[in-house]
Length: 158
Image 1: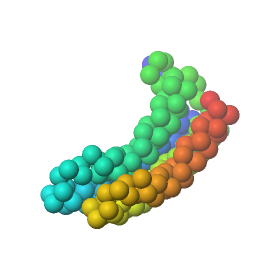
Image 2: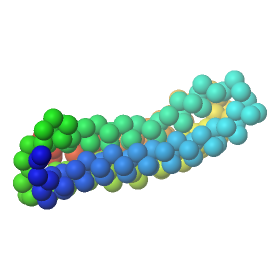
Image 3: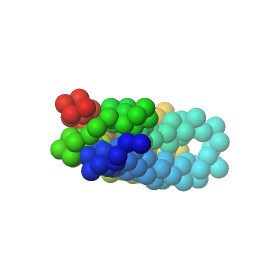
Image 4: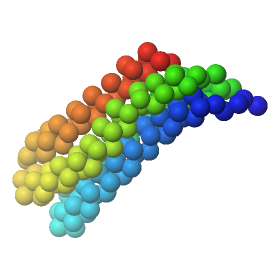
C-alpha cells in the first residue's frame, strides 16, 4: 500500500480541478446553446445539423480539462502504482493545472452564450452559419491558451 502524502494529494487535487471545472463549464455551455437550439429546431427542423455543431463547441473545454487530468494521472502513476510525489512537486502540479481549470471553466459558459446567439443568427440567416461558428470559436482561443499553458508547465514538473 502506497502512503498518500501531501504531494500526491495536491497533484490529485490539481487533476481533479482540471477535469471538474472545464467539465462543469462545458455542461453549462452546451446546455445554454441546446436550449436555444431546441427552440429553433421546433420551427426549423431542417437546421438541426448546423445547430448541433454550435451546441457541441462549448464541450471542447471539458475535453481539454480531461486531457490535462489524464496527463497528471499518468505522470504521477496514479493508475499503476503511485510514484512518490514530494510536496513541492505536488504544489507545482496543482498550479500547472490552474490555467486550464480556470480558462476552461469560465470560457465554456461564455462560448455557450455566443453559440446560442449564433443559433439565433442561423434561424434568421442560415447562410451565415460560418460567421456564427467563428464568433463561438473566438472564445475557444482562450481555453486553448489555458490548455497550452498547463501542458507546458506540466512538462516541467512531471
